[in-house]
Image (tube, rainbow, N blue to C red; front, side, top):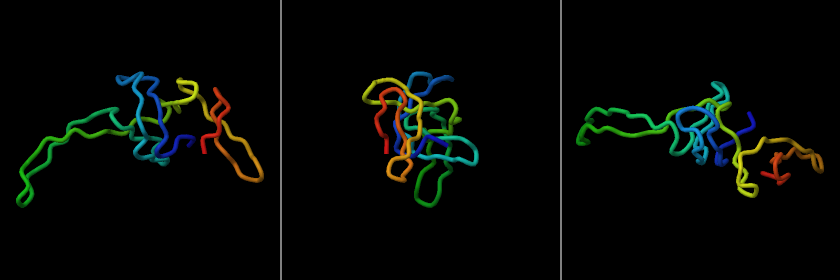
Length: 101
């Protein structure tokens, strides 16, 4: 999976198309990611002890194929490639050629 936690991504398809956000969690087994402010779902929580019942808005998982890495230098979504430098594998943005990490 080319998307990692704390990457900035843009949604390229679906109801939240065009939104950008930071990746909060990655689930490679399911090929899904959770993006901040995208795919907001309503969760109902029962009252527990002294806490009252509440309705919470939380981010739901979105398929990794529906998001693209957002290149801040090019200000556009970009594909991710790999380059080996000095024996270490690094991710690069295909649009700007900038090393991501």
